[in-house]
Image (cartoon, rainbow over all chains, first blue to last red; front, side):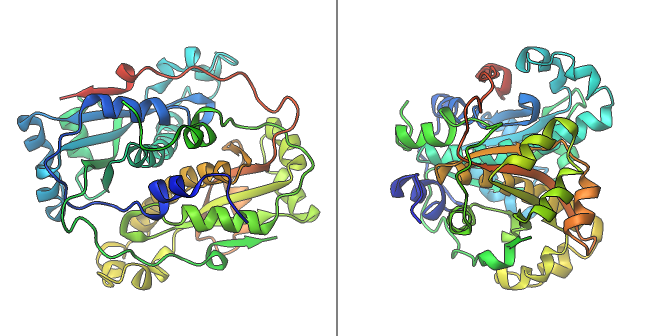
Length: 197
Length: 197
C-alpha cells in the first residue's frame, strides 16, 4: 500500500521530523509563522469553530514571564529558543461563530449557551489545532519542541488577562541545534492500537 | 515565504482536502488504515505516551450499535460510509509507558499515579493524535468525515467494555461521493488568531 502523499512530505512531517530540544541562533520571523498559519488554518474543527489562539513570545520581558511558569526541565530550552509560541483555547470562540459557520448561525445559542460546553469544545478543537500547528511548523522546514510541562493557570494569567482562555501547549520553534534530538522512542504496533469489530 | 512542504502535499492535506459528508461504495481495507497508522504514529505525544486507540467498525451488527448513539444528523452518513473508525483515549496508557518511554521508566508512578491526571493526559494527547489521524487519512488519498456529535458514554460502553477509555471522535472514511462537500467555510485571519508580545 502506497500513500498518496509523496515520500519527501512523509519524511518532512512524520518520519524524519523530530521533537527538538535545542536550536541554532537563526531567527524565526513572523512571515514564517504566517505561512504556517495560512496552511494549517484549513484543517477541520467542529462547526468550523477554530478556537486556537497563539501568542508569540518575542520580547525578553515576556520570555522571562513565561519561563517562570515552565517546569524546571523545560526552562533553559524555553529561554533559549529562537521563538516560543503559547497555544491556547479561546472559550469565547462563539463570538466569531456566526460568521465562521454561516450554515447555522444559531449554533452559538443552540449548542454553546453553557460555559462548560464551550470550554470543553474549545479545549478539544484547539487541541486538534495544536496537532495541526506542530505539523505546520515542520511543513515550514522548522523543528517544533512542544511542551506540556508548565503551570497552565500561571501562563494563562500572564498572557490572557480575560480569564477566557486555557493554555494547552508551549512550543519552541527554530532550526534544530547540535544534539537537538533524543533517540527516537519506540511506537506501538498497529495491532496494539487498532482493532476491528 | 515558501514552505518546505511541496504544493501538492499542501493541497492534499490542507488546502484541497475537505470534510466529506458522503462517500462512494469503494471499500477501504485494513491495509490502507495500516499505512495511515504507520505514518501518523511518528507524530509526537508527551512522554511518547500514544494513548490513541482505534476501533474499525466493519460488521453490520457493530455499525448498527454505533449508529444508535450518533446524533440524528450524523446517523445516515455513519450508516453508509465504507469504513467508520471510533477514536478513543486509553486512560491506562501507562501500562505501555515503561517500554515506550525508556528514558524515564518511572514516569508511570512519578507523574501518572493519579487516575484524574492519567485521564487528562490521555484525552489531550489522544486528541493531538486524532488531528494527526485525520491528516493521515488524507495522506492515503481518502476523505475523512470527523464527527463529535454522538453520545460519548454510550459509544464507550458499546466498544470499550473496560471503562478505561473515553471516546473522542468518530470518523467516516472513504472516497468522496457526489455532493460530498459543503461550501468551504471562512477562516479566521492571522491577526485574529496570532498576537506577539
